[in-house]
Length: 114
Image (cartoon, rainbow, N blue to C red; front, side, top):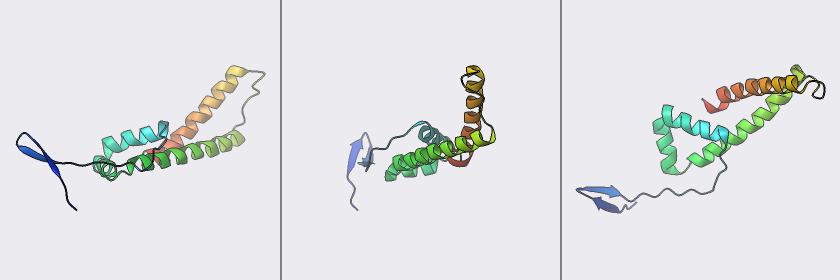
C-alpha cells in the first residue's frame, strides 16, 4: 500500500480519503447511536469512520430499532388496550404517548446504548 503525503508547515500528513459505498438513511435512532459511540466508544467510532462502515452500521441500527418499536407497540397495545379514541381523545393520546415512551426506553436500552 502506497501513501501520498501533503506538507503543512513542517509536517507531512497522509492523503486519506474515506469512501462511502452507499448513502444510508439515518434517522433518530441512528443519530442517537452515533452520538453514543462518539462520546463513549471513541476508538470504535473512529475506526468505523476510517473504514467507511459507520453509515452502514447506523442504518442497520435505525432499521432494527424501527422494527423493534413496531413489535413492542403491538405487544403493549395487546397488554394495555387503549381507551376509545372517539370518546376521550386526550386520554387516548396520553395512553399512546405512555406506551411509546415505554417501547422507546426498551429500544434505546437494547439497541442504541449497548
